[in-house]
Image (cartoon, rainbow over all chains, first blue to last red; front, side):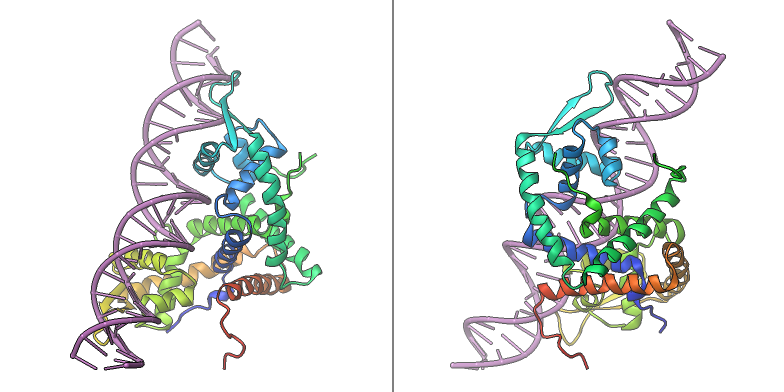
Length: 153
Length: 153
DNA sequence: GAGATTTCATCAGCACACTGACTATCGCTG
DNA sequence: CAGCGATAGTCAGTGTGCTGATGAAATCTC
């Protein structure tokens, strides 16, 4: 008798939004490479030679998930993974030539997909939309790690 | 060399948002009952006697996932699941007394959590935020089902 | 320099989420 | 009423995402 209206729950809307994205990604970008896989690949194109921890930080994924995703990408020969000779704990990652090719292709398609996904919003609304999500997500992430992020020079 | 800025990708932000939510939910609402489980329970409090397909429609989950979630909820005795005597295909679902109790308790906590999650936004920004997400999600869902949703009287 | 602590990766376990294939049942139509 | 198509649910398979435990390597400390 006292059910709640889920459209006022940001968590529920976040799930629906991600679902919507998943749908569009599959249809317009790739059925092979998923969006998190693309994100990992992207991070390694920006900074080749990162280790798994570093990738997880950039992409906001935990250790286990990074290991899974990296495993799939190396199995498809989109990534190289070698032990760091200077630090036996680390695994250094870098994209292969094929990985770079795939990334380039998907970048174009992802841009098209973003356009479609944001089509219902006017131009000013889009930047507003992205900004609002980011603020909420950032705040929650800061709640977890109470690190001093005061100034990042 | 041509990496992309993921903060302009709504899909990536959607994932981070859901992650943020997951974090807060675990900390402030429940470690036992997940947010999708709560959503299913909520739908059945609003409309007891729904079948799984109906629940999936309300909560926006596919058949398989609904089956999983319903399975966990019935195993915890929060839901009753009986075969529809009038239609042998259907399974009719309704919350147990315990299910209603849990729902009531979690409703209060979820409201507190929403408050915390939206804390970084001003009041007008909050409604704007929820509205924008909903519009984007709705549009994508309409892309999938090109049903005539013109007028819902 | 040996021992304690920290750090990176892996693994097991659980939950969500989708697709595609299969089963059972219902409803319609000839 | 027999058969055919549509519908509800299940199952198998894959991928994301988390926690908590474990192992291995580096760093810090005495």
